[in-house]
Length: 305
Image 1 (cartoon, rainbow, N blue to C red):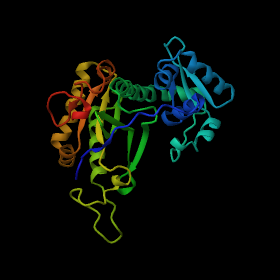
Image 2: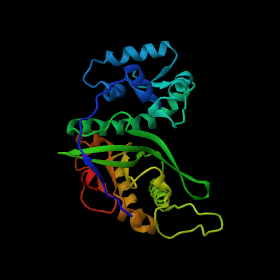
Image 3: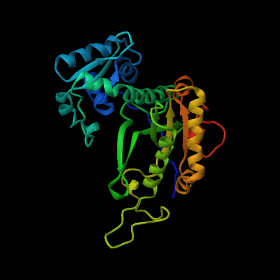
């Protein structure tokens, strides 16, 4: 099995050509929810804030979007698609095949905001860093809630799948990653067990009826993940919601799972995996030396894991 990069000649990053209201609907269809400031940073970072708020209010009057007011936030708004907005966007080219999950009330929206907006925060750290570096990573290059099948009808659900194009001179290197955003709302053991799910996805090959189901190692070209990816994506954990001490312990527990579980250890020798604190991503950028490799070693950029 290989984790080799795909490298092709560099080209100019395309400029947005879709009308802003269309982009706003697409982002909310993709991410499920985002604040006004997050939408501003994603789509029009150099424009006045009213550039975003005006079209959002028009879309709300048209019944396509609505918002919930975030607590203790100076009346900040988190926007989401209504049922009508979800029906309208389901045939957008960028959203085809993405199940619509319209939010039916502000109460329902408020229950989703903590995790959903933290995932968007994580995405923004990569978007801002990509702009600074001249890489390609835009508002639709991050797809939350991606589900893939495992054996026995089970599924692994990633908080997000990221697509990123690293530009160095005349070369464009395509990178992909499964991203898990941990707000310290689950036990450290449960978080670490997510690595077992990814190892199972990496090794899972559906068997024909009448053939043995179990297999010891991913060999050949029948691994189920090859339906979607030319190489298995990196596995990145973004941690927040606790003290540095607690987050450090959670990273240590992820490393312990790599060391203790045979299949996870085999995956880690083939696929780059790392963990970082969200505050560090926002302050230093994801290409800073902020990622702790789960196989051990010094902190580094996520591109160098």
